[in-house]
Figure 1 (cartoon, rainbow, N blue to C red):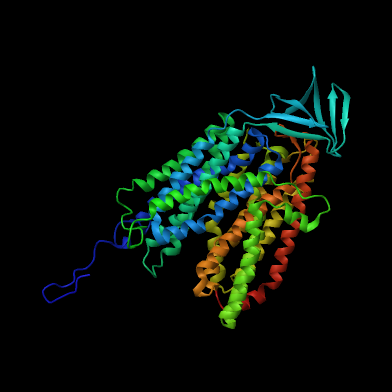
Figure 2 (cartoon, rainbow, N blue to C red):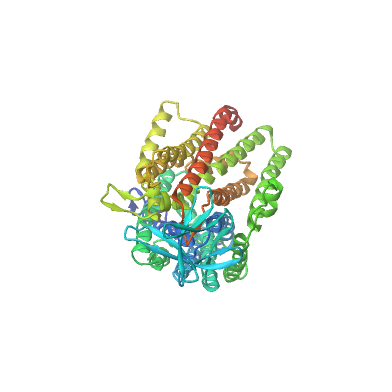
Length: 596
């Protein structure tokens, strides 16, 4: 750096102009518009693909509910875990912009790979060790009937209320099979299962580079102390919901109207648009998200190669997840832990060791006040796991419930698909976010805004109430064993209000409550908690598994009763946990020592 002299005065550095002083977009730095659009299109692809995934696994690949929801839970767990590493690599080596571009490339490839799905798996059934072909016929009204082919006969498969199966020859029972003696399955191409898993691996890795670093770039647009920062992030996050809103309508529609490849293809196009927006920014983002200055060779190529090398590791985790055995009856908690796939053991082990370990360190190294604040943070993290475990049933058990036990007709004018029901959440978030913001601001002016622990408790009670509301609707079904779509919409309305109570304050509170020396580690624990919640959400969805043949249930009453029982249980448990947190909230608030 040149030392100033009388003859060479320092010139002001204008190479990096504060965006606040240039063109604006709704009163914010103009670059926010580019990042808003990039995030909206990335979320378009992500949520469009998510709306299809569980249905795709059960209908096209004819996976059982247990295998499909377990794979879905593992996929979403990795999606929320990889940003920990992607954020670190961007901070230390790549810079946010290069990380976002690399992540967008991997995710685009992942979605395009999912388009190559091959022929639909052939449903089969195994009875006493012998395999039989299963044929599925679809009537004009969409109702599907399954037939087992035994020699020259086609026997209609009829599921009974007690779990047994009857093979019908016309109106006569040709054969009765006790519960557990009829094992449905599918003959699927190992090649295309491999293609599926590689696609999921690329999305998981790519999301780790994209998701944390696009938000970091938004933060760089504002100088320290700029009061517009919070509003700017609010606008930015609105892009998430706008992108997801439209993709959760269009991708499932294309999957039904054309084929699965079309739905995934649209998600891939959305992701590709996101990549083009950040790659060809016209110089608008010059100076933002740049790599840190380091001596020596650029490590980016090595990081990219290592990221690709992680794909086989994730592939192994997915295959291990799908092949995990069910715990033996009566084996208890020990049997359950032993039967956990490797991913479950790693997630639970890290979380169960990390939380008490950090608290022990805080007690030994911090002051009494810091320790109490850390305890408050950890309590909120644990309750956060419970919330997201139940909230994230949207992509798994609730989507399957929509497909099997929901009348998807809208006022008798038209019908939507099961995948499209996920758009309710995004629509309600867009509509209610301004209302909730005004509500909290109004209560704050009167000095009666609920504390953070109370908001967490309200969120838990509401997520439970949403499930109980749907169970109430189940109690009113007729002989079709299908609830009206408005009961499901009501659940998403209640869950959206719950999300707005907990989501905007969670990460902010963790950073404020953490001891400064380990705030980065605490952010990691927060994201780890969400990853654990995603995995457990898949486990909960497995509890709601229904036996299917060719991707379809054979007894809608059994299906409805199963979902109602599971939803009632988790609804009551969630509400009860929320009440417990409500009772603990004065103590937790005291431990927070004035942090708001």
